[in-house]
Amino acid sequence: MNESSPRPSTLKSLFTRFLQNTADDDPSVSAAPSVTPPPAVSAAQSTTLAVPRATYDAMADEIGAEAVEEIAKVFVRDTETRLKMFESTALDSARDTIQREAHSLKSAAGTFGLFELADAARELENNAHELDATGYRTLTGRLRSLFDQARTVGAGTDQLILLTTG
Image (cartoon, rainbow, N blue to C red; front, side, top):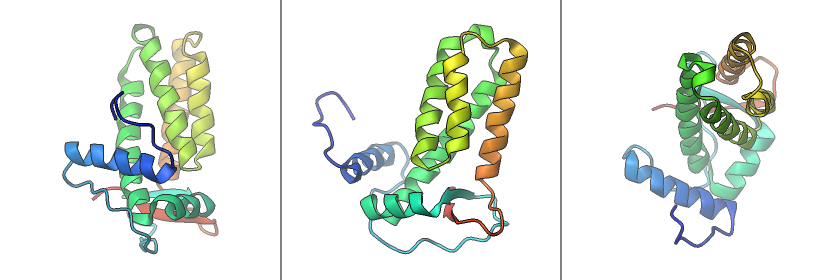
C-alpha cells in the first residue's frame, strides 16, 4: 500500500489489498478470498503451520480460508527470513534492525494466535539495545524453537493445520 491509498476499513479489505500487492511480487499468490473449509493436511508434512482453531475460524470468517492460507504462506516465509537474519547478524552491528524485525515478528505471530512466539519476539524487541551476545543467542534460539513448534502439531490439541508452502 502506498500513502495515497485510502485506509482499509475492514480486516478483509486490508488483507485483500495485501494479497493483491503480494501477488504483484509473487505470481503464485492470489487474492481470491472465498470461504471454503480448511484443507486436510497430515501432521507429518513439513509444510504446515499450527494455528489455534478459534484464530483460524475468526480470520476465515473475516477474509476467507484461501486468504488465510496465502497470508500464512507469507508469514512462514517472512518469519524464516527474519530468524535467519537474527541467527546470522552480530548483535552490536544491527540493534535497530533487530528491534524493528522483532517488532514485525511480534505482530505477525500475534495475528496467528502464536502468543508464545509473539511474547519472545516482544522480549527481543524490548531488550535489543540491552542484551549481551549470550542473551541474544539464547533468545534467538528460543524464537527458532517456538517457530519450529508452530510448524508441527501436537496430538489432542485444538489446533488446525494450514498449508504454508506450495
